[in-house]
Length: 92
Image (cartoon, rainbow, N blue to C red):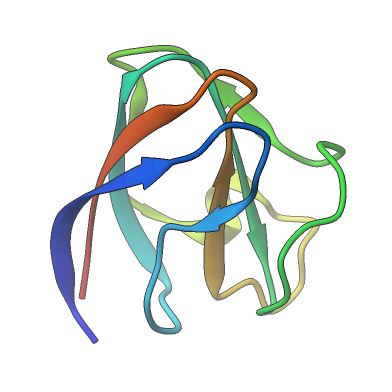
């Protein structure tokens, strides 16, 4: 399902930014530092393979395979923050 919203990322927990399988995504970290990771559907269990984004940083209409080429079949995107954050996300 398409969405265009801001997602709260709680302290020390993985939260899914996508609400459906996606190939392309736009997102921007709005507060705090977040670690973003793509998976085939299951929540990540560690920070390994994550990309760190500081406030104001993000990606615009990018293929998941461009950011995470080593994650075959990546269709879901997750965020983690050790201090809490908010992430704007938009995808079809």
